[in-house]
Structures are given as C-alpha cells and as structure tokens.
Image 1 (cartoon, helix red, strand yellow):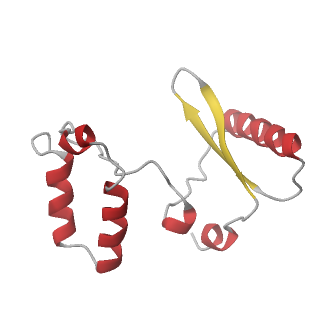
Image 2 (cartoon, one colour):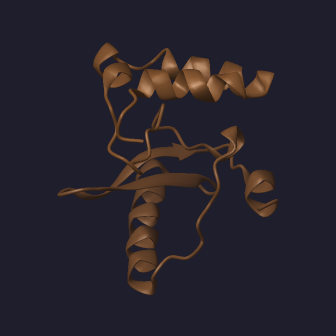
Length: 118
C-alpha cells in the first residue's frame, strides 16, 4: 500500500490465513533479513516473502511464452541436460536482468502431476 512495511503487511495477512498457510509464510519470513522486513514496498508493488516458486509449493506455470523466448529456453535447457547427461528431467531457468537466461537447477524429480493439474 506504499505505507506499511513488509513485516506489517505479513502480520495483517497472517490474521486471516489458514493454518497451513501460516506455517509456510512464517517459514518464508524467517529467511528474510531485518532490512527486508522493514522495507516499505511502493503502492501496488508485490512483496515476495521468498524467491522459490516450486510447483510442489503451489506455484503456477504461465505457458504463454513468445516463440523466440521458447526457442532460447529450449536451447538453454538442452545445454544443461547434455552437460550432465540426463535423459528425463526438468530444468529451472530464470531471466536475470542485464545477465540473460540462467539455469538455477536441474531436477530429476519432475512435478508432472502438479503441472498437469493446472
């Protein structure tokens, strides 16, 4: 809202959260540095408690990827898979500002059930 700190926003959110959500939010918040808890996001700016976006933790997938980006992602993923000799896996790739596409991790455990259920 441009006025409250991340900590204050979290406290408000915790009041109406289900028990399983509370546990997750507190675990994520425990990894924040004090200055991140004290930060006041600009109005309308999302304030993420953590950077992980795992399908198993409830993240969703946006399949709307432009053709040129899809080709770049496929090339990076193939390179990562070939580098470690995997046959079947998932590759987590991020697009870093001023750096480009980077592989975060290669997973042998593929969350197909979570993906298909979306």
